[in-house]
Amino acid sequence: MNAPIDPNLPLYPGIRLADVVLVQSATDAGAALAALMATDAIGFDTESKPTFAKGEVSTGPHLIQLATDDKAYLFRVSGRPALEGLRAILESPQVLKVGFGLRDDLLRLETKLGISSIHVLDLALALRQGQRADVGAKTAVARFFGQRLQKSKRTSTTNWSNPLLTERQMLYAANDAQVALRVYRSWRQVGVSAPACGR
Image (cartoon, rainbow, N blue to C red; front, top):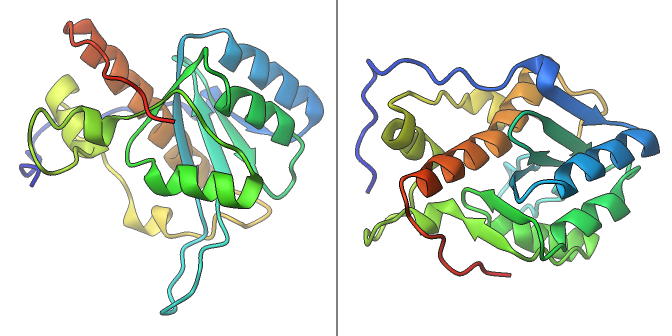
C-alpha cells in the first residue's frame, strides 16, 4: 500500500492550458504526429465516460492523451480525424509510451479501435521497487518532485464523450499524460535502467 501523501507538500504546478493542443483536424493531427514521433518517449493516457450501473460496459476510450516534454495533445475518438496518426504513434517501436495503470487503456484501445500498442512502460509496475502495490501518479510525484499532485474526482468522473471539453477537463487529461513523462525522465536521471517493455 502506498504511504499517505504529506498534505503540506507544495502543489505540483502541472501543464499550462496554452501548452495543451486539442486535435480537431487532419492538419492538427499531422503536426501532433510529427512532434510525437520526433522524441524518444511520450506520456500516454486515456479517458473514458464513467459507468455507474451494475454490469454496464464502458464504451471508451473517448479521449486519448499523448504528451511530449513541453506539450500535450488530446485526441477525441468520436471525431476520428487522427485515427491513423494515433495508430502510427501507438504502434511505433521507436517511441516509448509511458503512463500509470495502462492495462485497461491498452485493452480498450485494442478492442474498440483495433490499435495494438507496443513499446509501452507502465510506471505503476516499474516503480514498485519490490513492493506488492502499484505506484500511483500521486505517490510518484511526491517521491520524485517533493510535490503534491491534485487529482479531482469530480473532474475524473465527468462525461469524457461530450462534444465540447471544458478547460478543467483538458488540463486534467493533459496532466495525466505529461506527469507520467516527467516522472519517467526523473526516474531515469537517477540512474535507474528501464525494465523491458510490454506490448
